[in-house]
Amino acid sequence: MMGNFFDRENMLARVIAFLIACALWMYVMNEQNPLVERNYVVNLELRNVPEGMIVLNTPDKVRVKVQAQRTVLGDITEKEVTAYVDFADKNIGQQALPVKAQFNQGTVLEVYPNNIYAYLDSVTEKVMEVDTRVIGIPASDFTLSKREVIPDSVSMRWLELWHLLMSVSEKMIFKLKVH
Image (cartoon, rainbow, N blue to C red):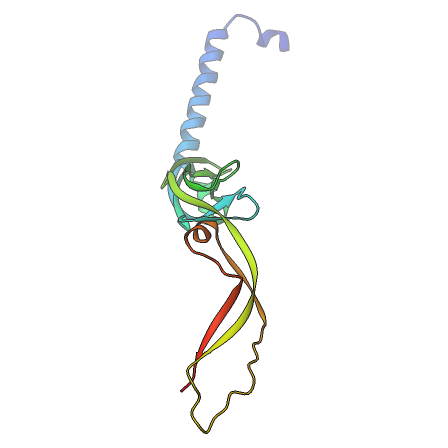
């Protein structure tokens, strides 16, 4: 019986019937579950930021337009669409970087903005002694007997760019005015 199926007799009719069946199946599937597009506003991830560096001037969120079957998009939330900027092998300074997006259950059509300008800078940390300076003279019925500072040191963190623009002393001095 199997030998009869592959006979050349009626082969053209079989191929045409098969192609019509495939076309009808695709038509029905597309009508019942068409491709649709949807926009999602998602958090922008900052990936591969070098140790001791900080990124400035990036948006918190971006818009991603995706396309998938209607039944797939019906169950999707923003958490399944990711948008990110990759800082691997980037140096200090302003960077023009593409925003990339991933959507495993369909196609990413568009990301807005598709490029960002971010500033990458290093963070400097320094422990500084805290001291006080008294300015003025206490009133005649008052005396200044003891100066105590708690805590006696503080940890300061700032961007390298700021460090270049300002001079940083070894002490943090607070001025106390007395009258």
